[in-house]
Length: 149
Image (tube, rainbow, N blue to C red; front, side, top):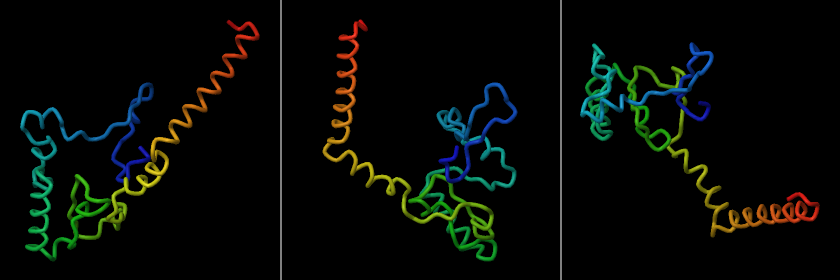
């Protein structure tokens, strides 16, 4: 839950015995039937649109161009953290409404150098498993000499 930058996963506070953390699945069962998510179908003012990302970005920029007094000239999610699956238009900047202000750099790009450094040439994992195997071998020998088996 804490790892989601948009605070989307929700904790089931009404279920005290077996609570779960849940998030929207975009009505996956409806999508497999070729339908749109239920929230998009039922929205009376059509404030939600579902489709391919490129088409949605084009629609968003057209709306901004046609209504410059109604929308901030920014499609939130187009470039943030490398681009997101959700896009937002607003009359004021999203961070003024408690949305996180991200840069354009994708989040995995921060951790990739660490992972590549750790696992370069597969030496650290092999060394770790060798070290752990050595400890197991030592303790197994000690148990055998003490009559542990």
